[in-house]
Length: 306
Image 1 (cartoon, rainbow, N blue to C red):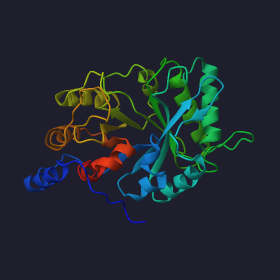
Image 2 (image 1 turned 30 degrees about the vertical axis):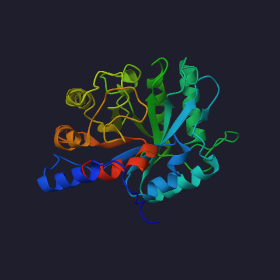
Image 3 (image 1 turned 180 degrees about the vertical axis):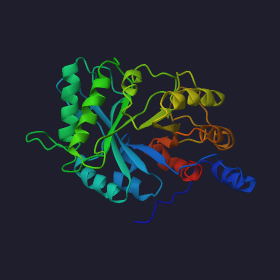
């Protein structure tokens, strides 16, 4: 299938692209790596369609949002689960990494880890329901497809025991030879440190951190705050690849959000990216989310700068 081509309703995008090309301003160290979150809106299209755009190097399925109290379930906002497994395999065949994100914006009662035993139980369920495990009697919503790893997007509840969950999940890598079958990433809020993920990140087991510079109500809600927060994240986790997390809107503000974060594209190109790409552990750009990206064409512009 040919990559998706859609007209971009953001009137400033094409003029900005033309201006950027004429100016010839070069980013410090682009990687071309673009991660997108998928699964939050049935109108965003299928996972296969997202992978066939050619825009993304990683797709994060969101969210596995019920866990920690003997119940395990995910919410893909109306997407039929029966098709997702084949789409995961299709994306992986195109060398696109597919992760499953746990947590999200569910109520605090939907997920938490009240004890060490619950951390072990959640790891066991993720392994047997979504990763390489195949224990009889454990329901696999995506069939025999296995995601490449787990992303921690913890926005509710206590920070307790997520470090233990990370260690349990990483422990399953003993079943693989020569590669990591369970890769760990995290998607914290931009204000450093993220109290809910701080202890988990201290384990050193997370190979990537997607820092969310969107959403409002944080300590880095203005364009000029980004560089300072970015320096803290990259310095704290030098062995991890740090991704700049942005909303797929020209203003940088997610649709319907009440925040004041506004990483406008011209500032992104001329100011923000040249600064963040100086970090040795700059990894790329993370985009929230596929539904907004499909409407705006944001990644089509940003991919060349990422």
